[in-house]
Image (cartoon, rainbow over all chains, first blue to last red):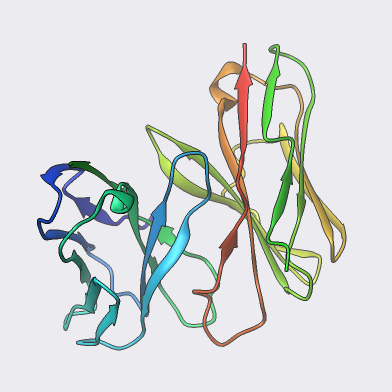
Length: 112
Length: 115
C-alpha cells in the first residue's frame, strides 16, 4: 500500500529550541495534514495543506506542502513543554477519496 | 459539544473471547472511521462508513473482524475470536460531509489487551 516516510522517528531537544520534521512519499498527495497525539488520547489536527507550495502557520507551528506534492514539513518554533507528544503526517491521495495514509510518527521529548 | 465517544477505554480479555468496541460519532457527521494503532504498524485504517454504509473495508485484517453502523449515532467493531496479536489501541473518528477530509475528529481510543 501507500506509505509515508516520516523522519526523524524521535527527537530530544531543550525547551526553547526549534523543531523540524518531514514526510516524504513516492506517491503524489492531494492533501497533507499534520496531527499531534498526546498520551492516552487520539490524534488532533494541527494544520491542513491543500495546494503544492502552500505554507501555513498555526501559532508557533508552520507547515509546507512540497512543490512536488510528494513531501511536507512541519516546524515548531521556540518549543515549550506542552509540545511533547507524537506528531503524525497524513496524506490524502485523491480529493474526495476520504482515506488518509499516516506516517509512522515523530516522538518529541523536551528537556526543561 | 461532545466529541467522539468510545467505550470501553480499556479492555483486557483472554484469547478466544469476543470483543466489542463501541463508538458514538459527533452528531451530524456523515463519515465514521475505525483505525488501529500499534507500535509496529502505526495508524492503520480498518474500515470507514458514509451515512451508515460501509464504503471501504480493505483494511480489515481478516474475517475475525467485523464492523457495523446500525444508525448515524452508533458503530461497533467486533473481534471474534480475539487473538494476542489483536492487542492495540483502536480509534474511532468521524468527519462531516465536506470537500476536505482533513476534519477527521478522533475519539480517545480503546486500549485492547488480549492475553
